[in-house]
Image (cartoon, rainbow, N blue to C red; front, side, top):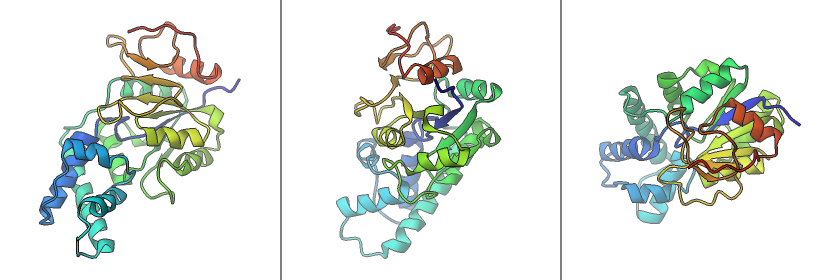
Length: 258
């Protein structure tokens, strides 16, 4: 059996509900600021989330919805993305974006027990750091892999392979926390066991490859709901449960708690 040595977290949708009320709003403010009449509704943004990466998402939107754009895309897209990042950081600093249920408790518990922590996200590094600085402590994380640090974004496994290499760990030593099909595919291709916490944009994704699918991580007084997977005698996700999932091939016996 391989002991648990590290927890690896995606950011957007996993640590916090950043997509609908954070990134989407920031994109729209950047478009308005640039004099563009583009507006990403909640439904449209859900479709655009199939494309990983903000710059890639803008390019896809232009190709699919505004193919007659005349501007130089090599300059326009980075400019829009930079403006979007600035608006997003303003939203974060205002405290409007909170961590998801159970996230801070689990991360603090793992840190104090000497379990390594890492970030693996397609979000830009300033965005990831801003969220960590607002609600956690970036120094707790041994690796913060974000943005364009690897050539290919999720569902490519590159970001997870990079994190494993930087921490000098095997996939069997770690547990990943994700919220999307693309993130699960990336982790699975890197041979990592993955815990999924659903959100409104990803609740209908195919998570059949996940070790465990939950509504959220839960708290002692706010039990999680198990969507998929096997758990015994637990009502919230803690380090003990993480150890058991790593050491028992993803199964801890079946007790459906909710």
